[in-house]
Amino acid sequence: MSSDKRRARPGTAVRSGLAYALLLAGALCTIAPLLLGALTAVRTPEQFATESPLTWPNPLTWDNFHAVFEHGIGRAIAVTALMTVCITAGQLITSILAAYAFGCTEFRGRDLLFWIYLATMMVPPIVTLIPLYLMFARLGLLNTFWALVLPFVFGSPYAIFLLRQYFRQIPAELIGAARLDGATTLDVIVHVVVPMSRPILATLTVITVVTQWNSFMWPLVAGSGRWQVLTVATADLQTRYNEQWTLVLAATTLAVIPLVVLFVVFQRQVLRSITWTGLK
Image 1 (cartoon, one colour):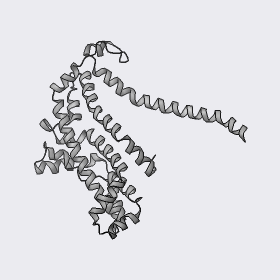
Image 2: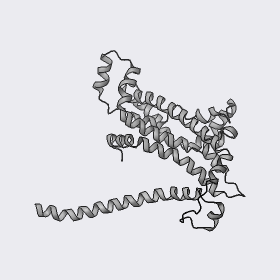
Image 3: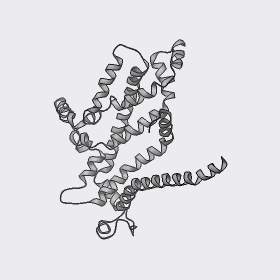
């Protein structure tokens, strides 16, 4: 028995080494474009045109970051941050309430209504783009902050589905005990469901922030001028007749930094939610 285990150990070590090698290769493939973008952001246009992108810039320059702020990227970051915060808060609140209704309460037609609502995930966003544009145009809300926020602030099928599946794992005895103590539905949600769902709420927060921070098509159509978001402002740095890749990558580097910080802050909760729900 012991000899068989000893024979199995080299094979196990080889498999583990191959797994770590594949993970390392995947990590390098993911990180390499970000590092190249950051290196390009600290090059001069002359260095970008004449030097290899793999060489270390000498000397480093921060002029590209000053230039993008002169192009109004600071205001675009502020607009994007405000839009993202409002949409994330709205989606969390409305999705928690809807997910609790679909997952922890009983009413006639609950499952049918839930699956009909979930089926809207199959509709590509481009299909609703023109009707949504016409609706906001007739309301006179184009090129306003409300046009950026209102279409996405009232939850999403994915968020409600994710929370519903998580809420259904909460023991019904805890909710029943809270109701025996005289707790209302809102009390149960605030004091029982939400505290037990912090990992999945952190995961949903990260997903929502990343999605809204990187949104491009609807802000391009519905917002301009003073309500231009970061992705649209970055695209405007690149014109048909003037290729300013160093400025574009400087703006892109600024856009990536908040998302990296967000993931570092919430990574433990994200991993806990994946472990608890069994997602792979």
